[in-house]
Image 1 (cartoon, rainbow, N blue to C red):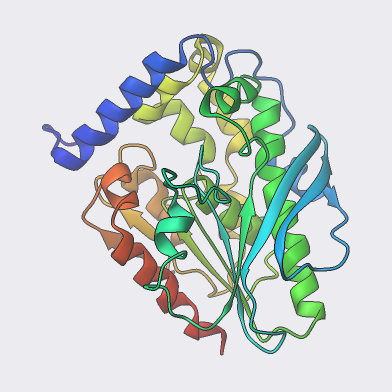
Image 2 (image 1 turned 90 degrees about the vertical axis):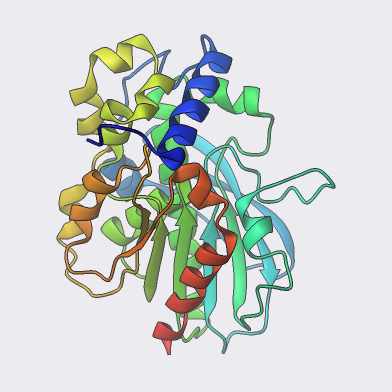
Length: 303
């Protein structure tokens, strides 16, 4: 542990502190910490995708052991079945389908811009509960089971899209995401592994550890803070992730991230080529050019 926080670490800590105060009684898992394990929820999730829609926004229902959830996808760019596809998943609390005048989200910054000039199909996945206000999203996260169901649903949709694209003859599918989306990316690799390449940003496989010991524990309710082992047991998936020996992962971590902690998460990546930026979680999320370049560099590997 560093004896003195730098600017990147301070901004992460201050942001989490301010957010935890704003949440008041709606902190993560403040209602219940009863939940199926995330690996079981992912493995048992069922989704019927139907025909892949290559234009507009689509809503998809997913059945999981934690309940029924609605997520969605938006085909942002479509060049054809003979072109590789990038599936991207947003971060926590972001609505990637919001392109309003005052909206700001990672998908919009990275891809809804002329700076993204890679001629690949591009589909963005939206997690359950991310079509509503921040306050409504926070209330939805009071139960650990809803959080697990949300992650499992997004992962199941990524898997259904990947399977459909492969059936259509796609020459490659790259799955990427930031923060929450990075966890979904790694969950898909751990429990499905059917994409050609994975490019997780700010994530690992010690999901429960983030809530148990990082500064983000301030965002959780008293019962969750008192039961860190329950969070680890429910959310961690290191074994499933590391058992996949395929060289198909290009992760990116921020050295000074106080939420997705570098020293905690880097070990799960073993010999995978790890990109490290000298940022924190907040400053790293705003390092648009670095993140866009990382995703871009992962795509030629599918050829």
